[in-house]
Length: 124
Image 1: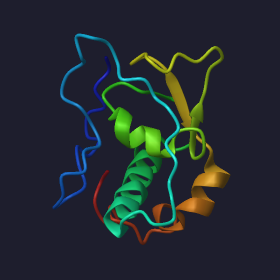
Image 2: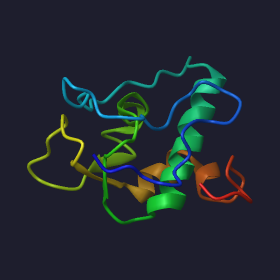
Image 3: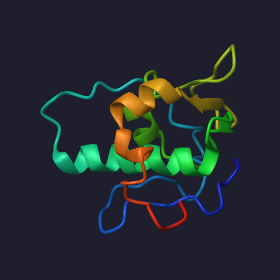
Image 4: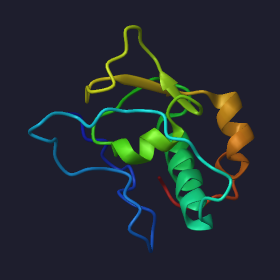
């Protein structure tokens, strides 16, 4: 499992994790699309936006390995703003390639792209 050095491990001041420390003995948690309902807490929406911003600053438009990125956090974006970058795609692999669907991500999380997000002035 690749570790994305320098990628933020969590949203500052919260317990919203962005990365994991080590791979699971039972294998990677499968990525699956989670529905984001309109009544989600504001803190959950901020965590999604901060995670998207960190992904954008760290990877940009290039495909990236899932590696040590948290499956739960990825699943909130998977199938919409984060999509598979390979076919066939194995949702249970740490080596799976993903990429940002920039148009959908900009529409859903404009603050992650316009410089007004959590990581402005810091390196993500």
